[in-house]
Length: 72
Image (cartoon, rainbow, N blue to C red; front, side):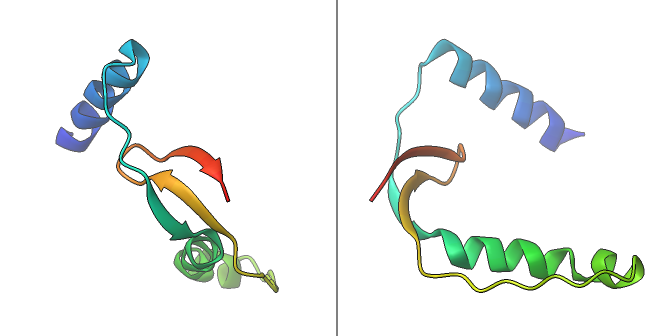
């Protein structure tokens, strides 16, 4: 419940545009692989196969707000 409240508060701040963007370089390919790994059990349970071959894609992102500021 507290995470829901935090998310609502964060959304409120984002809508007011009253925040600072803290950009950090992140390898988007690694993030996507991590997401796929988290979904692995669901993929297996549904008898699906997920294949991916990703090149490194580095972007600058505000990780806290998950706001992509721009891609390199």
